[in-house]
Structures are given as C-alpha cells and as structure tokens.
Image (cartoon, rainbow, N blue to C red; front, top):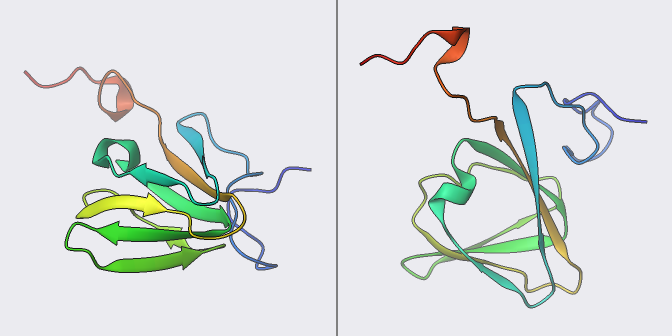
Length: 113
C-alpha cells in the first residue's frame, strides 16, 4: 500500500513509497558501504532529499564534515560540498523529489523573450 506524500507521524519521513503528483519526479541514490559520490550541484537542484536508510557524511569544500541519518530531510542544492560518503556498514539510500522539467513556465505561457 502506498502512503500519501506527507508522513502520518509514525516513524521517520519517507518518500520511497509515496505517491507523487504528475509534476513531480523521484530519484533514488544508493551509496554502498565505503562508497563516495562527488558532489555535483546540478544533481540536487530543486530537490528535497530524504535519507531513507543508513547514514551519509557530507564533506564540505573546506574539509568540515556533517553526518546525516535515516529520516533527515536535506536541501543539497547550492552548497559548498565536495562529496557524500558512506562510512557505515549498510547501503545509504537517498531519495530526491523534485519538480519535473517543463518546456515553459507554469500555466502553459510561452517564455518571455
């Protein structure tokens, strides 16, 4: 059974088994134990991200690190990050939900120009 997008308060927030509207899309990123993913801002643009499983260490360009875990909600766009790491023993799973790309602005109006 699929749950509505917003959680009912029982446990951590999850997008993985949620229904999304037609204007939304979901991307699942699995980071295996010991794995790393170079940060590319374009990968996270316009996305709300939930850590569905495991923990992820966010490595900033300056070297500082922050660990986020299951149920944490993130905005990873336009951050000074270098990489995402999984230092844990289980695969870390991130789910990014964003608006689908459209050919024009909302309402079907042609772009200004």
